[in-house]
Length: 242
Image 1 (tube, rainbow, N blue to C red):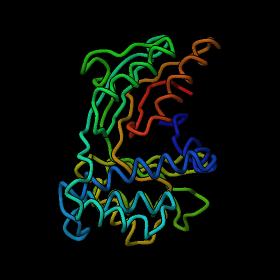
Image 2: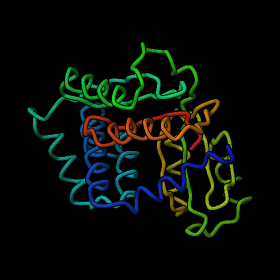
Image 3: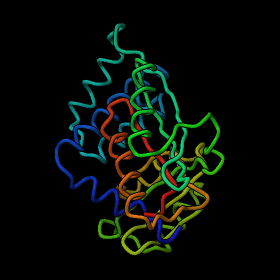
Image 4: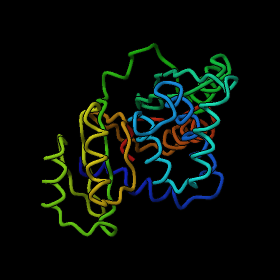
C-alpha cells in the first residue's frame, strides 16, 4: 500500500474551505437517513447508524446536527427516499473510476455523472466494467501525531479485534478489515480511545495507473472535481496514482 496513503488527501480535504465541509455534511446526512430507514433510529440496535455517527463525529459534525438528522429521518414519513446507485467508467488513459451515489432522482444523477465524465474526456461504462479491479475493504486511518500507542501495540489490538492487515505510513497507520468485520474493529479501537482520522468501508484498487501527460491529469481532475461537487455523489473511487 505504501505510496498510496489516503491520509494526506484527507488532511488536505479537512483543511479545505467551508464548501468542502458543507459537502461532507450533505453526504453524511444522507447516510444517516438511509441507516435510520434500514435499521431504526436507535444506534444501540443499528450498527450501520453507529458507523455513520462515528464518521460524522470524525468530520466535526455537531452533535445537535446529527441528532436532528436522526429524528427527522425517523419521524418524517415524507423524508426523501434515497436510492443507492453506482456508476463505473474510465478517465484519461483508462483510469478506472467508480461513483457511489444516493439519489432521489436517478435521471438527474445519471445525467450529472455522465456530464462529469464527458467534460474530463472520459466515458461512463457498463456495470462491472471496472469494479473487478477493486476490493471492498473496511479502512481505518489513524494520525500518528494523535495516537499514543506504538505501532506494535496498535497492530496487535487491531488484529486481535479481527483486522486483516496493518500498514505503517510516514504520518499515519492504516488498518484494513473485511467489510463484515469493520464495525467490530472500529468499535474496539473507539472503546480504547484510539482517535481515527477516517473510518469507512471503501473500495481499494488492486493496481494503479500513472499519468504523466499534463492534459490527461487536468482532464481527470476536472471529472473528479465535478463529481465531488455533486450533492448526489457520496464517494468516488479511482486507481490513479496521484
